[in-house]
Image (cartoon, rainbow, N blue to C red):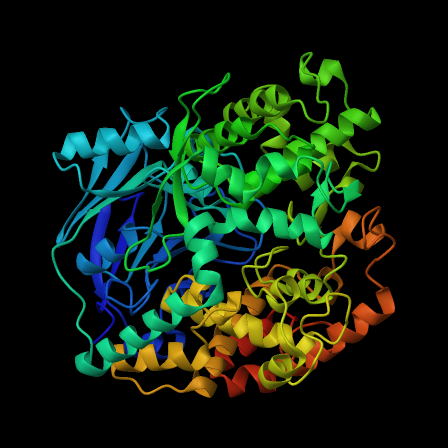
Length: 636
């Protein structure tokens, strides 16, 4: 095979057995790679109702067919399983150097089943693959684990994915860390690793990736790289990374403060904006493999109580979530929070959502000093944020409850505690305000993993777009008008871009998903030149549709219907409280109309949100339709 390595590694942790199986060509051509193949395998291998922390759950690591080549930003890996946080499809995406090295070792995917009787880590050295004891690593954080494995195997260049204490303690939003700060963050994939007693995956590869048409491939890569480097966003993102979005969000009036109790400009933005971070804290910029963007940055705190704190990856996530969300303008504390998240292995979004909810519950009197062991959860109290973060990772005191996830914690507390959350299908959001941006609201509500925008960001709502360009791309002039409900078609196309990128494992930052240069046709050409399988823009959209419908069918098996395709908690019930969009809200009637149009484009039943048999059969998914019908969940 060209492009694909042609091999899947199957690891049975219960039996301690490892086998190498061929990647089925039809599966590869239909689902492309990465997230697509992961989702199809997960639908086949995981039974409805499976507990995300049980041995019956299946954990899949998936590469793309252009990863490991010189193609720009093709450096990602998707990790998939039944989510222990949401109880539906879970996956997360990580970049860096691990994905290409896994390709060079000769594998497209790793399928992990069962549970090891004792902690282990998986060691992949080309064709030499083994499970090694990890009892001596249990209890170490991710940074310590990386150093220990490299020392044990005598190679300081090994690539490692590992969990920290949060994953070991089954924190339901634990994540998986590569090196110091690359994270497969959302939906609790680190907890799944912990439940399987799998501490880490280490890899060394000496092979390469064969492409079908190398001369044309190189020419296409050169042109894509040139266009990326001449894009207006290139200079900003290379210099500042996603931290540049904090000031933009504040100025646009969509930044949320004090757990969404305020919206608009953050009073401390002058202390945490991208220019301050770059001037006072960043020490160098770094890139993932084969990426011209180098949007990540190493940092050092030089003074104050956190002097000497060093690390990498200060992004909009950690800065926005642990700054404005807590009304916390003390910048050095953000770096401390970021390092703790990376060391413990916890998703920044869900951690922030859980902690911010606790702060508001404390403010409302739903919890008190007896529940917090005397910790004062007051807005701006960064010491309390840091201490509570420790307690969540260790499952101590109130942290034990929060480790179950924000929604589960709210249900346990009761008395209306859920109202302070902003979520869809149990996955919380802690960033900008979707009540303003109606396309983003629809994308979050219909996302197949829950309430975020990694499935389909309508970027024009954030970065603007001329009416002419909007009409050319989406058939409507309203793409950049945040409060317009004319967004169903835009969201559908944005989901196609995101799905295609996740299947090829292209970083979305350099794709049309982020108003960048790599659109659907460019990705289709890249795929065709690498694999030798001819694919155009429409063919890529169809493949993305196939993946999205398999994922939707997975959700349908778990009981998801139209009623779940809505924003819940504060998102759905309250208007924007302040700022330039004060009073803006999700209009129920207009949102339902937008959802109707979205279902029409998807070919889903308008009453239930279930893919129709005609849609599934058109995409070659007859057996999926048969299974849903046998369960009494089919749609004609």
